[in-house]
Length: 279
Image (cartoon, rainbow, N blue to C red; front, side):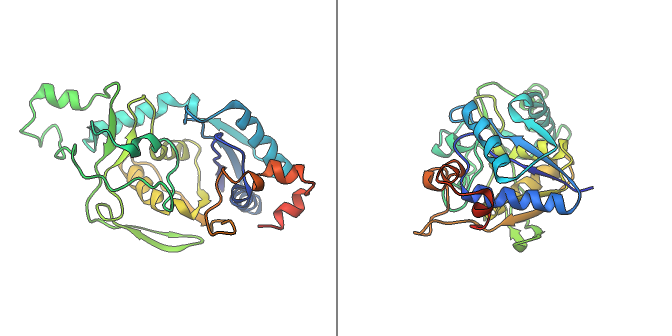
């Protein structure tokens, strides 16, 4: 059975670009006689606000989008910690003590045309260790590396030069090479919250998502998430990455484009049908 999801972040008002992507997700679920989830991705504690959560639900309903189930990420911290413990047990996750500017943005979904996580220089990367295959680690050190430490950032060790390939249902065949297109990426923050990548993978599996519909600025994130799915032995859904909407200057629409927010368009007198015709 088809199961899809809408996954807005309550960090601002939804704009026309969000609307087109969410309308695509809604219609694909509807046409497949499937189920749709609304996932409130509210883990960005610095920017997420209750009034934006209320606004996004109201604006989606105004546009004509309905869903059957809801999930709020801030209620799922135990599940994310359990996944992190599983990654630590495999030896694929390691602590990172680097103080880098990109860590501040790690909780939000990255976008390859703006703030995509840069390739890590492997400064803190540890040798891949297992309990039976790490003679350089004594038993106490091995056990310590397998415990989630407080106030610590963690990265996933990626398999260098092993292409990750998938066929997107809209964008076609895709291939990204770890170590070339992206490096060891952040999966846990020192403020005791998961990164976007880890939370997304854990929730997609929990919700039994069969197809992910989102913007094509997240194609590279899909490769990262496939690695996490493999490491956690979780299923990989199919993907449909929509084209991005851009403003008159060619910039990708973002929450800074208040003039194109659904709330502003509605207040200007446009009907939902007129807004949908702008897609």
